[in-house]
Amino acid sequence: MQIVTAPTTPPGPHFVEFLIDLQSQLLHIIDAENGLLRDRKYNEMAKVQSDKHRITAAYETQIKALSENPMLAQNWPAERKEKLRDLTARFDKVARDNVILLQAAQRVNARVLEAIRNAAMDQKQEHKGYGNLAKGSLPQAGKKREQAVSVTLDQRL
Image (cartoon, rainbow, N blue to C red; front, side, top):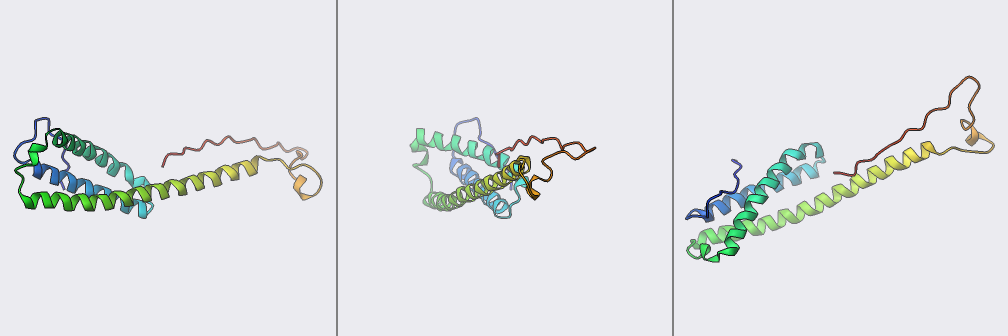
């Protein structure tokens, strides 16, 4: 699949084919991103997201041109219009799945960060009083107390 970007010239007679190609690419990329999200391969998403943003921008530019001049679609063959409708329906499904998967990944990420934060807080708390809990709260002769560690959590996915 060749990745394309929006042309700088006004839409021509092949505009419908260009839209179909852009929408097909966007569908393919979001589907690939969904696969990475399902497989929890978050470290491999940067390239896919870069392509997704670029193709989305190109597609939005073309849709804006079409909305500003709906007459562009007037002479499109019926089968090409049907192809666009089919791609749009498939895209809507994949995009809904993408939102659900991204939200799930964010929730999982937030829970992991919360667990790390809680573990860091538990280690930082000092126990006072008698019994085994007091063990380690007073420095032992000849041993230094451990230094506190500051933890910063990045909440990006």
